[in-house]
Length: 75
Image: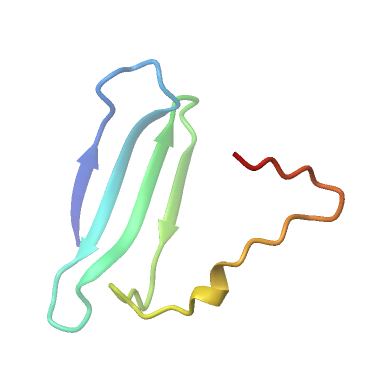
């Protein structure tokens, strides 16, 4: 796996760094992991399996229904 490190330009934000892990290969190439280090020193690792770039998705999957009693502000 190859890793890419991204760091913010300013040090006063909530993140210290993000590392992106990418698998190389014919059939398994693509995003494999994200490692996030926040300003408190907490590390979060997200692992991805069966990643599909540009996968077709149904638009109905992204319908937002506000919870009962929520205020909805429209601009």
